[in-house]
Length: 426
Image (cartoon, rainbow, N blue to C red; front, side):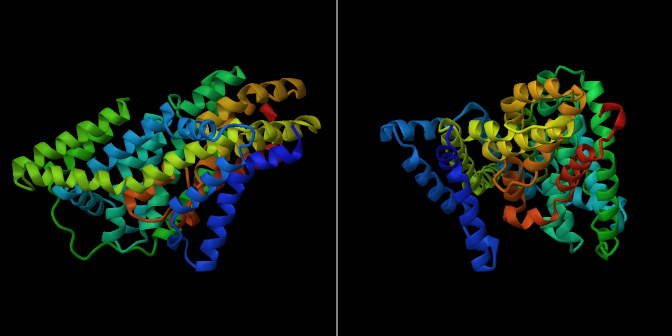
């Protein structure tokens, strides 16, 4: 593929990034620039430049990407998450859960406590999306009660969610990374844990220092334990491995049963709260669909193949091979906004590179998983970031500066490549 054609295929993504960042800097506020409008401009541009095809065919390709099975599953999760969050808030479940946390956790431990909770739950359920759904509303409530930053506490949860996404034995990324590289999950877990452990310790220390200045409210209301039940049910069923959509439906039903029983709302008020929660996710659903269509056009026009060809053309030695694997999965992740799909896309190529230059397959799998999670954690149009922003009612760009963990594991994994660590696997 020629450089000109390859860059043209990637240009819609470059246009989106340039427009969004440039306009936001000009406005002095990332929140002032509607991401939907920027995605619309980039999407129209992507359709225009897809030459050689009838216009209807280009639109069909875009529509196919905007309605893929994986994307529609995420959209249904958005809908259910909005309904659950709003009905739980209206019923008083969030306030009750926040009061419980403020009662039993010292203020200085709120941020580290939230991070560890996100790490534990994501490791148990293997999904960052489920962790975000369960914990972001609680984190937002704690931030408002303790006079902390809502984007900060939201970022704490998003960061912790990627701990399990990266390490859990039942995470999609772990399964795909180990299958494509031909190694066991337990071996990959050991290598991966050695690489990211310094990042976990560092981020915990940062949150402990940042949380030292927080103060609990002078008066914390008594915990209404029945209203905590929906969140406990959501967390327990999620940890037990129940499907995230089933978990959310169960949570909505629990909110309704408890709310109707104790008089927190009547049937119509419950339905109204669910409706408002669903509507609040509308912008995120539109963004996700346009991103899916845009990225499908980039893939169809050869943008991802261009990246792969360029990065594999000049590999020299084992360190260069590992760096190329990291760069491949990172760039493809930017183009697909899905870390599992990114690993699937480049997994077989990474295996060939690793075998040719003697890269340990356990370390190759760790590199694929860690870098994909690091990139997925910081792109503002990723599923997890959009969902967290919607639940917290903030802009993804407000969360981004506080995402220490995804950045830390990216740096740790890069250092592991450059410093040949762990030595046994390098």
